[in-house]
Image 1 (tube, rainbow, N blue to C red):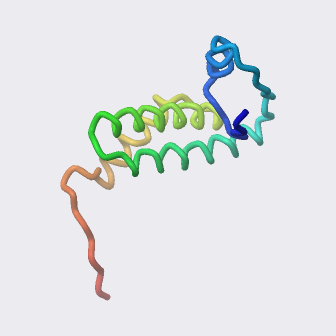
Image 2: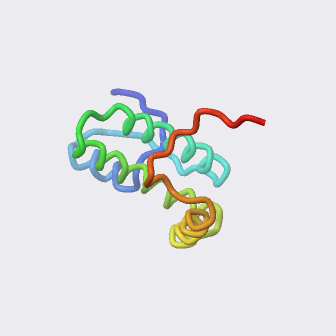
Length: 107
């Protein structure tokens, strides 16, 4: 049986059980959960970076967004609050729509 040692979505054990396979899990404490979510965010971002078509890229972005939802909750806010802050920062500092690439700033 393969060893994963990673955070998985809530229904993964149920899906594994439906295949007739055995598995082992445990519930993480809050500190472990945050650490594993951070690891999961890197995993999902890496999967996104390694996509080669729009369909797969969008799927990986959805996975990354799910992790962001969970991370927001661990910090006691909703994703809507994070989105509100994102909008405030975009208004103040801009977003990335203009595709500006900064080379240097001279004194």
